[in-house]
Length: 288
Image (cartoon, rainbow, N blue to C red; front, side, top):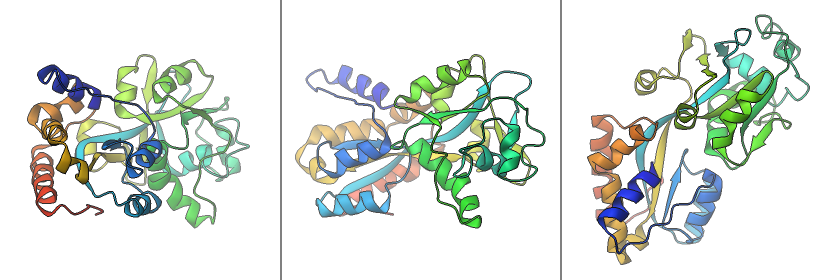
């Protein structure tokens, strides 16, 4: 999305040089709070440690929601693999107690009964690495609540196949025997051939990762996507404010859907624009 908006902004303003780099949310937050970049995109809110880093460095910022998104679990499109997983099954296959779970059915060894309707075939878990907001969302919304009940650490299995580039995960999962991958919805949409997105059941029935279910709040791994903007840089760089205004324009926010994601609905668009103006007027950092 940011590449799309930056490309359009650069075409309309040929004297402006735009640089867009891809990192995980954690790495981007580090660069932002160190003052090395003026804008960072994030697939989760900055955590307490990152906020403390920004505060220590005196970085005042605005946090702007620019799109909706979802973390999606998926498998190769093979008949024997499931089309839906419960939260307990996800924990048993991917959570902190699952290091020795080498087949889908072996989820039973973590939570009895969780693997009973799963195939007795090899399991290969594939996803982004430690700095990815995608991983953190999966931890926060599915793994951590169960881990706390079981007095376990909030973490994924230490032996899952972590890839630096999220764009490689669909291809790697497609070719893996018994692959179970997880990425953001736009990444999967761009490489969905031969892959099956999984619904998730947290107790009220299986919910598929669709735009409708993200907007109505029923999909359990829905998330907002943010832009963090350095307010001191806004004061000294008029072009930076013009770029952010471009992101928040109708065309800019529509770029989310154009690149495979989920655009904000009308109420969300109005809210983020009001918030941007309020933060500009106050000049105070937004940590809410």
